[in-house]
Length: 287
Image 1 (cartoon, rainbow, N blue to C red):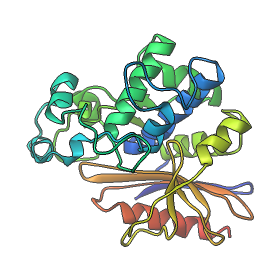
Image 2: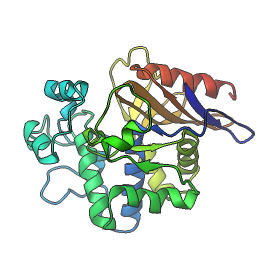
Image 3: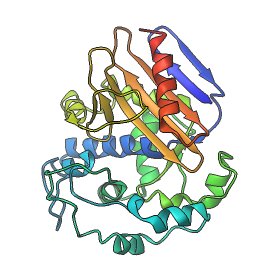
Image 4: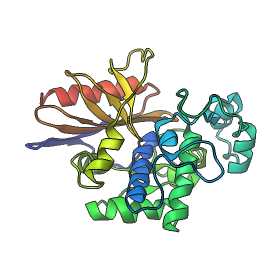
């Protein structure tokens, strides 16, 4: 297990120099860039994407009605067989992307495809590839130098976090990899109001409550914001994201408690609950 914890008075870490895949914590970086673009006047959160029936907010919040390739049996089989990723066009055709599961705003379904569309908006507005946009607008100002977009099979396999080869293009919304310390630095700065404005941060943190059983995971009041998973309770108020890929999970969370702490945990496991419980355990040492 690799982890890092940051509090106002202390910082502890394990194997802090190892670069690991952030999996769906990448979505928090995407959402942050989208909010920066709204601040710069490129679009409004409640405006529809050109030619689409859903808004930027609905994509960020997973209320757009879009389906996802994660629901395709062929996708899971292809990943298990270490096959190359389908082209974006092929993937969108396979999932019948224009056949929405529900009318936008009338339901909730987690969708990586929604974040693919948001990544494309980032590249369109900044006029650079996603990896360069993240580096320039998020990480360089924080003096983060080891985090990068992983775009080739060779780059992913060099991370040495799985015993089989994997094509990161299966992460159609992009895949960031970095040290757990980098994730903590980014998330702590974001939640402390140092990256986006306070009004944008309030938008990000506005909860959309999820009324379903999360199983063994530690969240008893689960909700989502814009690019973040939330747990809204007096005893545990958290903001961050968990992600999973072949043979590993990653979790990064800010715990809004008497002494706020930010934790990132990476583990070679197939259970997201393991990294989430470890994050909670670490944060409780500073309750």
